[in-house]
Image: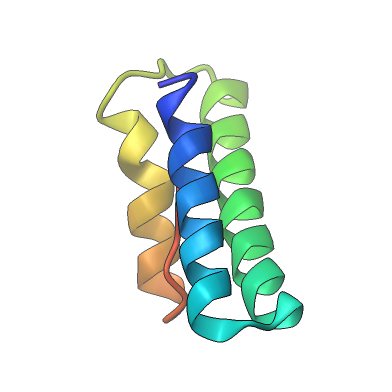
Length: 73
């Protein structure tokens, strides 16, 4: 997961660039996705809960339920 997650994020970034060709339309959703993942995982670890494969999917579902912007992790 240490290598595949950044590669998946880079792939999404490149695909969004191909589709939109605008830095604003690419960077803004990527920032929202990254902030969501970092905040959710930080709260999870900070509250003393364990991080496992199922809890690592929480940011994906929380971001999708709040906005129409696709999220990556």
